Structure formats: C-alpha cells, structure tokens
Length: 349
Image (cartoon, rainbow, N blue to C red; front, side, top):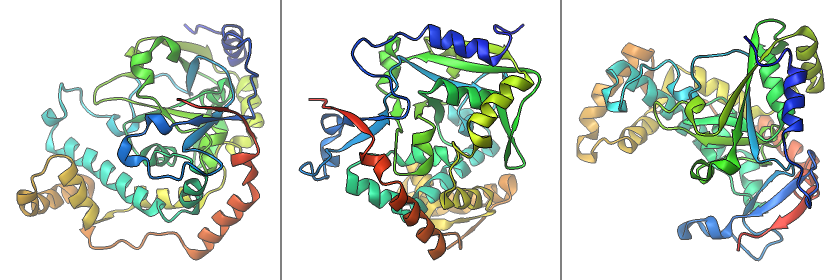
C-alpha cells in the first residue's frame, strides 16, 4: 500500500514539513559560495587565495535540512551502483573471484574516465574560478559505477526521477505502479553529514541543474538503513509523471548536452581497457608492488573469463577537437552561471 495517492500529495507533504528559514532567502535558482579553505588538508591548499573567489564550492540557495532521492520503482534495498547485484557478505574479501573482478573493472573504468576528464575544459575553468570538485563525484554523474549514491537538494528534481524512467536513451513517464522518494534529514545526522559530498554548481553542465549531492556508502551499507532516512511511497499516475516530464523538458534540463557523456558511454561499453589503469587499480586495492607482475597476469585471465575484457596498452577513446570546441563554447555562454548568480558568501573561519 502506498503512503500517498500520487506525487502531488507527496511533494505537498515535503513542502509543508520543510521549515522556513527566518533570515535567508530561499532561491531555487540562486547559488551560495561556500569557502572551504579551512576544511582542506594542508597539502591541497595550492590555490591562489588572493583571487576573486577563495577555494570553495557553489551550492543551490535552497534552504532545507533535507536531501532527497527519487526512484521510479521500489527495490528491497538501496545500494550504490558499484555494489548492486553483489551477494551479501561481511567483507569484500569474501566475494568470489567473479565479483571481485567485476568490482575492480568498475574501478578501472572510473579511474580511466577521470583521467580523460582532465582534458575537459571545465576542469581548467574550475581551477581558474577556484571551484573545488571531487572527480569521483563528477564521474558518478556521468554514469560511472562508484561508491556514491546520488541525492538532490531539490524536491522537484527528486520528483522527476521518481516519476520518469530512462528507456532506450530517452526519459519516459512512469504511468503505473509505485514510486518512492527518500528524504534524508542531514541536520539530524552529523556523523553522516561530515562525509557527504557537495557537488553543487560545478563547471560541468549536469551537477548544478540537478542540485547534486552524494553520500558515500561502504560495501553492504543500505541507504534505507541509514539513520534519519524516510522512505515514502506513492502511486504513479499519468498526470503526475507528465507534469514532471514536461517541467524538465523530457530530461533535457537535467541532462544538458555534454561530450563527456558520450565519452563516459564509450568507456563503460568498452571491451578493452588500458594496461596502466589495470595496474594502478591493482596496486590501489592491496597488491604488493613486488607481486604486481604475477597478479597482473592472473588478473587478465579473470577479466576475460568473467567480463569478456581484453587489456591493451592504449585504447583509442578520447575527446575529439570538435567536442573540445563545443565544450568551450558552452562555458563561454554560461560563464555568468558561475559568478553572476552567487547570492552570499559564507566563510568557514
């Protein structure tokens, strides 16, 4: 049985139970600059603090102690993409060779994509503006399998994901069944809040419009069992789904065109991976340097057996000159989004 008859009732409940801030203006289209100088490790304080902006992040000026996650179907648990479909064991080392291989493949492709992303003009523009970005969180927004789970500050963005589903690369309304929106009370969860990742208005097209946050979850950790998470179920209706599909222009508002998405798709679907990233991931996940050659030879057999993947020296996947030109044109057109719409400055000192 659903908690709410339709998405409209659920959204109204969220709106009615969100406290109003007595001093700050709640602006869904504005951004607030958060100064992160004092929260950075000393070795990362390489930016020029004398510039117009100290190192920080832009996040939506929506006052709310809550974050949301919408899903168009109900599942028995809520895991990050990197762990979905894995058997439940106490420790990752208890996984079979097949599942350990699949996990490592996801990490190889994630680090590979992040490496390619360094050529993206948005990365260089972010450095120029002193906007701090987590590359794994950005990779998450382009479909890479990571240990992050996507959340949003916006009720309506969550409602879109709860009412619409992506089929054949197109967003379509979910007109029957049941949907769910999770509401996470961050103010009541300081132990989780300190690990939350604010993606915010990055110089990449997607995170800002999606009012994006992420929460990292360890292997086997179910978001539904995180303290202060509500799971609210509603009945899908043609009217509700049509409303949010139209509001976000069939998903085009939330998934702005970006060649990085094409690059991510190529990496995810590739049956060949670069040798250097295979070695990096093996070392990162516990292989001793003096045993890397033997482990590598053994691992490439597992890659082929369980994933049908071949290891080669270099895979011809990269941005084209035309794609780089399109990205630069986008940044030029939208540069005011990164400075002109900042409402307030908050210093952490």
